[in-house]
Length: 164
Image 1 (cartoon, one colour):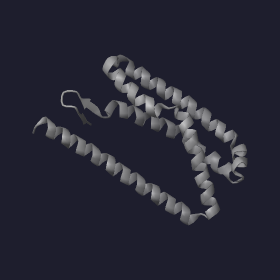
Image 2: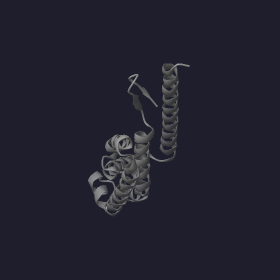
Image 3: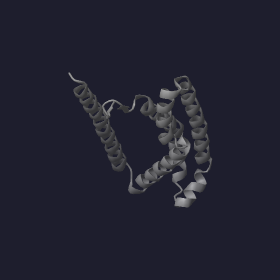
Image 4: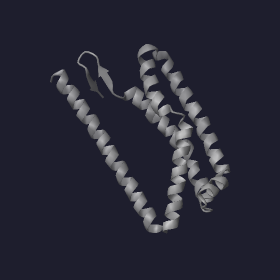
């Protein structure tokens, strides 16, 4: 098999994996939403969505922009200074862990004030439960960003196409 054919097979395999992951993720997302919508009232479903929105905002704050910077920096350091990649990753994980726990604690203790903004008293308990997922979600996101930088697409400089 030629190099171009091998590269196309790698691209097709990577695309297939991404497509399957997206379909599975969407399926479970729709399934969970359907179960929640079926079992709870409209008001409870609204509180759930508000809590998820606050969690998403907290996740953006907790990851501190690593979703854009980490893949680029890992790829850069892997090529120029490979001995510093481990330190870069451990630093990103440590910073994200501290930021995520701090953000989670802020949301937990300010849940009453946040619920006043939305004029929904039931949001307090929903936020205090759902915010426990924030540190784990943030660390998972950083690990995914690290994998993108490590295992992501690389430009084949001789043939000018991307390989996975």
